Amino acid sequence: DGGITQSPKYLFRKEGQNVTLSCEQNLNHDAMYWYRQDPGQGLRLIYYSQIVNDFQKGDIAEGYSVSREKKESFPLTVTSAQKNPTAFYLCASSKETVVANYGYTFGSGTRLTVV
Amino acid sequence: GIQVEQSPPDLILQEGANSTLRCNFSDSVNNLQWFHQNPWGQLINLFYIPSGTKQNGRLSATTVATERYSLLYISSSQTTDSGVYFCAGRGNNRLAFGKGNQVVVIP
Image (tube, rainbow over all chains, first blue to last red; front, top):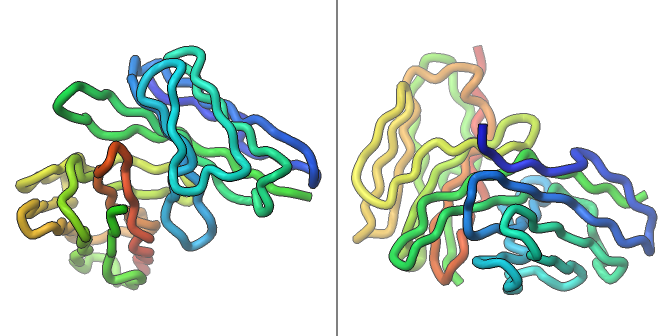
């Protein structure tokens, strides 16, 4: 079955460390997204990519970096510059055409905790 | 960017009751979706509903795009319906989310 796989499910980071969250999809979707969710809040967009080797900042990109070297993969690095990285991170993908988007599919998330 | 307002923010239902969740958008959006976030955090697609009405079992949704709102109906609620419901609409190449409706169904 096609889907989006995020790993790991739980991640603990020491202050000052960079960590990378994995997101892989086999849906043949063009676009991929990273969202951050804080307790009791909605989702906020970190970065998104509509094609390979291209990505754009979302609303809260500071302290994060991404790459899109393959269509299937969109890893997110949480750098030491991110002051409050403890959160739930969700990756999503969507199929795009010139005229339409056909809905988003989400992974199961990674819960990052700074210790 | 697009602002998404969901109401009510919190809802407690007796099992078997019906309810309506509402989502308002500050501007025109495309590709409106409703999601249910389960206790483990995963977002489950409920409806992809840019306009019109769709039904899936005890759930149905209606979007009136010209008036920038969408409604999610839960009928004969069950305890498994508990969780957070999000609506999201697409504008400027990104999906904007509301803060969610926290629904608790009590037996």
